[in-house]
Length: 275
Image: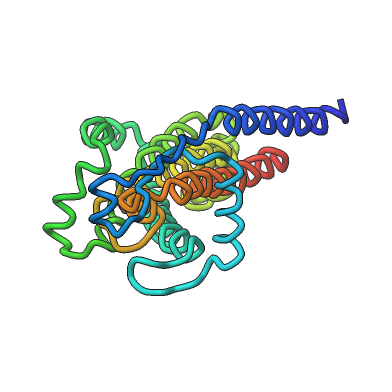
């Protein structure tokens, strides 16, 4: 059993090498014509070619980008580190604001059947709305693209945390709460000393779901609002037909998303271990 993680890691490496090998072999460089088209002549003789690059080219581009990730040469030419930093700032700001509101409300909903029945219709109506549907209204009211993007992250993050918190609180064992009442604990102490530790794994599950959704949404939101961020970076490089940068940025989005999920999954395992 102890060799299982090593074997899994080895299998992942083999699969990655196989996948990249197939990709490299499948990308056939088109033969370059010796005659320039009329369009190329108008463009000064530059060859106009767009094709899916092989992984070797993407890796070379990744090395160049990651060797200097924080360069800043103007509004439309910033390093991948700066772009990711802007996106992470927006995601974490909206996410933390959502947690500050969703978790207390989730406690109230989970502990009070009356509040559950009163708030449930609002939750069921608002929860299915696509976060990006709020963007035009946010831009009109807030009139600031940065704050509007944070608001969209707030909206998409709040529901999984609120629902999971309410579910976790409502399913705390009744005899634990009865013991707290026997010891004459106040409702506040009961919430923090009994209910919160018991519901913590479920709450962290909601937080983990929320951070994944938030990271997905920020890419689309930044494509809409422009300026800075990894979503804008992807769209800008697509407009430049720089597919090396597009694929590299897609891989970076996946890596950062994985790290965010690993951070919360580690916290969840720690809470479950200490129960």
